[in-house]
Image (tube, rainbow, N blue to C red; front, side, top):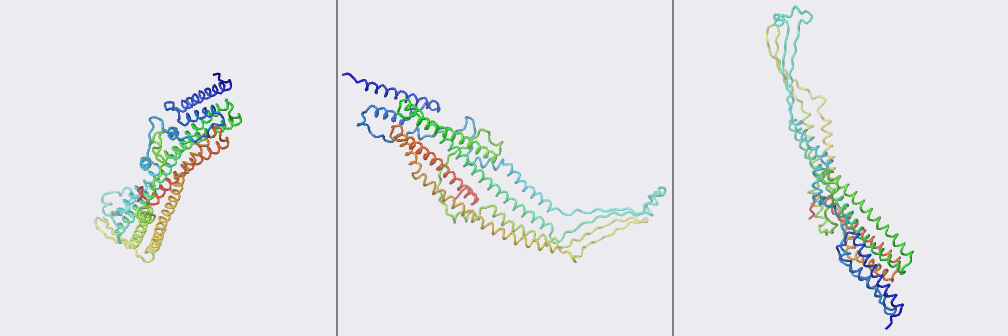
Length: 481
């Protein structure tokens, strides 16, 4: 049986197309560093279906079916992985490093040392006063500087005096200083709470940048295979040169996404390293972990009740009332007059004598009434400030809880099917375009929708994780009920 020349030419084209498809697939895998993996089953199946459809008569060709997602397509590429030997830091480790090495926090902690030093000053007693004098010395008659003259004519006095504090001034000073130290300690804890949230927020940003870089690299590799297959189809005359150039130009967007994602990750790691302390981690460190969804199960009322017990800024405001009351007690104690008792030893005209003196200020005009009045107003002010802080805590928890709940709903929308649907739409359009059943516009539109949905889902998940960290900050604890 003689095979017609047209059929032999057609079979030759089919064999040539299959050879070019398998060669381009192998080259793409070598370039992406994954030559050890077998070719994606969907790529082989697409090539075989194209060849089979081309060999069949037009009336017997079947409509293309969307391929199933292969494990190779579902596995992210290691584009965002750290270099060998670099250190990976978890969220808990990042917080510990920041609390130990952050220079701003270390500078703030010095306020506690300063306050403790003020306690030492407040607990000090007054120093005794030593006095002395010499009178009737013959300075202008040096010849009269004799023992007899000094003993009979000159006068010598020496004395010591001490101020006795009344009203418990020292005790009230010490108590006021201790109360101020307690407020300072709570303020330092609040600064640690703020730093912890900043570290957690920046850590989530780094995880988002890492995830976006992995996705951009994976999407680039996938579209690179589409470009390679389109190039072979162009050589075979299945698509026009204009369509091929449009696809090739679209590759620039994917390459730009990878470059931008790489810069975003580097900047996020730099900002996180600044919070942890530059010397605490190596330059090529990386974050360990992934964007993950943790359901919010706590009730708002329970979180508010816990925040009223845990928040250090509210505790500092309440301690401020006690500190203000200590200032009132100190002001009243300072209104008490303090006597000064002193004794002198005198030598005059060959005789020695001693004298005792008592000095007591008369509280006729100044009884420290202005300072007492001021401290009483300060107590009222501190009470209002504590009430405002309490209301602020409740508002912070409510806002954070609402934000977390809203972001959780958005995450559930993406995970319920939108991400999967966008991927299936992209795969169907890609398969249909390669089989000649879809236009280039359909392919690019599906690819654009898939990329936008993937990035939006990652952004929504990162926003939800950040809102959880904000809720932890509002409550004042790392463990939510």
